[in-house]
Amino acid sequence: MQERMIWLDNLKAYGIILVIIGHSIVITAANDSTGMLMKLIYSFHMPLFFFISGYLFRPNQENYFYKKWKVLLLPYLIFQMISVVFINVFYYILFVKLS
Image (cartoon, rainbow, N blue to C red):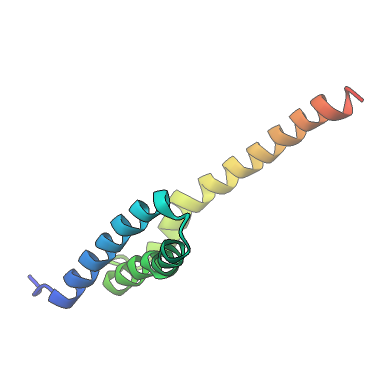
């Protein structure tokens, strides 16, 4: 088993604390200083989690991305095509036929 990276655990903890602070400030963002603090926190707390997950990512299969594409992206694209067809049909029925 590999040794834990303390600096990475601390980075995750700081990110979680910033998420909590950022979500708490949303309620009181009417003030300029809190609004600026919210913008500062929101500018990097999510990229921080993406950086951490990318740093820790280790694919364990040779065709990892192909399997993920098949499992995640293909159903998404199919659902999007079906949604576009339904949206256009309903638009045609509601706005073009009624005119």
